[in-house]
Length: 441
Image (cartoon, rainbow, N blue to C red; front, side):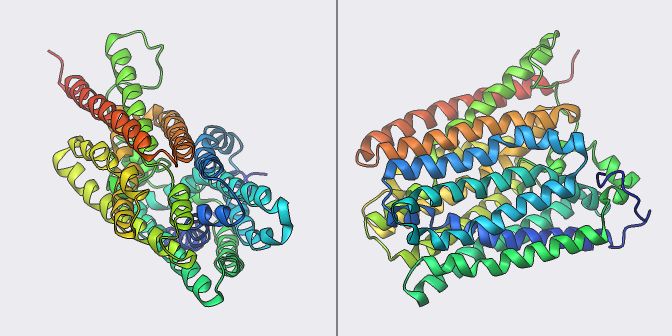
């Protein structure tokens, strides 16, 4: 029996804010685990004997999995109504797979393959839990204001993304080795699962939080876009132009809106390509011996801090000045490869700041324009389609970066050409959107 049909009290045992904050702390703890491992994935694979190309394939493939599988897991969770089950399973995969990385150096020649598989499993967990968790969060947040609810959740999420790499760096520095840090990540992972099961016991059916206020917010423009990612309903519930998902629409405006959405999706894929993956960046830091392995997570933490600042700033600018703020993404991205794969620590740090800033905008404010291009009834499908372009871009960028690791000028040239194309696409998208938004005669 699903959590939607089980016999439960008609009044939730927790206040809406308690549920929002509780889910936020679950994300904080799991992000310590996930981002702690992501911060050193490339360096870890390099220690196990991986080439730059393999690092690109594994880390890029992992990020692509996290995005592409949502096309299946989101509808599956909707059909079954088993949102808690999907959420718990997804979090459990991350909580278990990352600490197991501790044992991979003991496996000899098989260690590299096992580590690669564990990284893919961890991101699969992300794909399984993300859509379902967001439904649970949206129900509770709707009772307090989705903009505020998702904003608080995103803040706690970012704290975990920043703290995890710091924990890994500290343990690696003390132990003199990277591997014990993965074992320590059992602690936040276990704490997250305990808290998650407690929340499930207290509120087996979060749909009871739904109120007239929350349902009304489902039809207004997205609040606080900087706080929202691809799975954020608050970013996907405002009136907009005709659907950009159903390309079979018969009327001219719908077809034009569909093409506009498709162009914007290509834009996102091109900019995602230029961001490479931090796995390749951390591989470079380790292979070039620019920093000690224990310092690699600190570099990642710098990128996460830049991502948080950029998401908040561009979200505010988006609300104030509109989508033109997104023109900054390809402009920033064009400088990333030459800096993050540079020969000095200063260059890499500067590049990581830009990488983090562009990533933060990609994961938040870019999604706000999707909500403005696609009407409420189609936004779930739109975000799924959008994730495909981002996933393909992430995978292609990481693989090409790994393949051209010894030919950096060629990589820089490819990224530059693609970012110019992305900039042109976005200009066209903004003009078409403005034309579609004008009231008819």
